[in-house]
Structure formats: C-alpha cells, structure tokens
Length: 430
Image 1: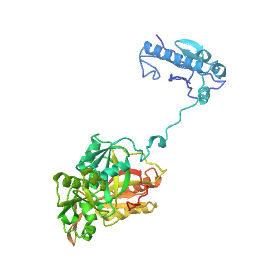
Image 2: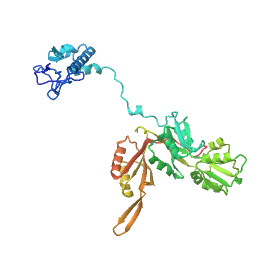
Image 3: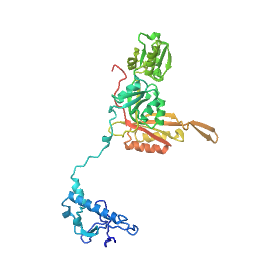
Image 4: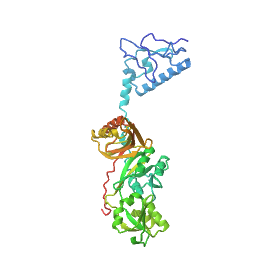
C-alpha cells in the first residue's frame, strides 16, 4: 500500500494534540498535514511507525484528541482561520473544519479564565525553627542533664532520648532512631567542646538550629550531709572548671574528679549512697535523684551560657526573613597561608564572623617542607570551622563561599540555620 505524500513543501509530522506548521499560514498559501507510514524510515523520516497498524493508531489518536479540544471550545470552528485548508488523515482528504482543530491562541484564551493553583513558595516549605513538633530528640547524658534542658527548649514537648556518648547521639539520628540531636558546641567560660566539632565533620548530619542555655550549677549531696563533711566533688570537666574559684571560696578542701556528665555525677552519688562525695549538677538533677542542694549558683561567672546546635538528617531551606547563621569547615593544602584571603572574602561583603575554630587535620596532621638553606620544617595542618551571620539564601553569602572555594582544597557547609534570638538573663531570680 502506498503512503500519502503531500505535494506541498510545508509538510508536518503529527504532534501530540495539535498540528503546527513550520511557517505561519497565509490566505494565499494553503498548507497540508502529513500522516504517513512506511517500512523505510530512512526515506521517510517523518513516518510515525514501521507498520500500517501503527500509522492507523496514531491517526486515530490525533483525530480523537482534536475532537476533545473542539468540545472544550464549540466556537473554535468559526474562529479557525485555516478552516478551508486541505488535510490528509486516515487516507481521506478532508478539511480542518471537519477535524475541529483549534488554533493555539484559542486554546490559551479558553483556559486563561480558569482559576489556577497557586505555586509553592519557600515559605510553604520552610518549617518554623522552633515549631515544637512531637519529635524524638537525642542528647548526651542522663535525665537532668543540661543537654536535656536544651532539647526541651529547642523542641518543647519532645521525647528526649538520653545517650551515654556524643557519638551515640549522632548515630541515633543517622539510623532513624531519633529525629534530631541537640549537642553542645561551646561554653562562654569553658570554650569549645572539641569532640563535637570533630564529630560534625565525621558524620553527615546538618545543623538546623541553635539554642543558648544559661547554666546554673549547684553543689549537691545526700540528705543530711553537710558540705564540711565532703572530701570529694565529682562532675563533668567543664563544670569543675566553671566552679573552681567558687569551691575554693566555700572553704572546701576536696578532691575534684571528672565524670562523663553533670547529671550522671548526681546519679552516681545517689545510687552508691556516697556520703563523703558531692556532685556539681542542676537543680533538676537534685530533684530527680533525691539530693539536697548545699549551695546554689556556684559558677564563677553569672554569665555562664552554653550554646547547643540542633542536628538533623536533612538541611532546612535557608530564608531571609529572619537572622540566619551559617557554619562551614574548610582546609587548604598550603596550611594557614590562605587564611587571610578566606577571611577577606567575608570582610569585603560586610559579613560578620561569630566564631573561628581550628582543629588538627586528622588525615594530614603534619606538613613537611624542605627549605634550600633552612633545612626541613614541620607544620601542623588544620581544619578551620567558621560561623558567620548570613543566610545561604543571600547572594552575598553565596558569592563569599564561591570565592572561598577558590582558595581552599576542601569546603563543606555544615548548615544554614536561624539564630537563637531569645532573650536570657544570667540570674535565676530574674
């Protein structure tokens, strides 16, 4: 069987639902529509299929789709400027008027009046940073720890999951046992918690928020025990350092021993009935483990604040409608020689840096250089952690990181997250 080949040079291949000419039709130049089949696709590249059945199916689909369009717009027949042009469909000559084809413009006009769904925006996708959902939040320590209080402040009414180590808290989120983790990264008196900085790089979690918690230390002991009877005080190393001068002022001649966490120290004293040992922990820990408070607010500085970060498996979408902070970590093969160039990328864009922390590069801890006249020099290699006050949604932050990437051999964004802007008072009474 022969194929229908149009005599005009402006031939068309069938489209999904509408036939479009390769050039605009005019009243003086009729056009035709091609719908052909042939076994030789090289000779007829516009063939819709290798068999007559494919050709008939395609033509039937095109004809039915054209009929559906015409039913949506009954007046399209009279509006079509090409109603008297010749077409070839299913082997029969007919007109476009019989096919009820609708021009593109008519179809657009008929649908423009229909209400369209509103497109999603960033605000539809971004959760509030302190949304308080019922989440399972991991923290390091036992009930009564300051980390538990930070988890409650970050996510009210959450299910707090205690973990005996920082590593376990990270893994509990990665393994879907917990939804979030709230872990300390720095204290206003004791400085950075280096262990968590190392774990931030080792694990694939993202910082999604921060919370600052005022710390109020108390000296705890078993009921009936006076502070003069104490020969030992146990607590977390940070807590012992933060209360060093106050313990001396209290006239306590005691041995100071470090344990894993503050609330764990209170639990240890209570379980083992240690009447010669005191613990430095929170007032909540005293309530949970049945201890008396011998002295309150024993930290050396009333402005004792610990900063915690909230970690999740997925990052949040950065926004610009509230203050944001971004945390990054980078390194360079040439050591600290490019540090000034990296910092200048932020200074030129008026981006404030809130923290710079250096940690030894575990993969390449030492860099060796051979000088021509000075011999061999050994330098420590470092990773640099930087926090700056800008959102990744801001062009200035994106441009700054693009420039930083030119000077560094390694760059990773740990998270872009809302800053904790809640007010706090260093005094418990206030």
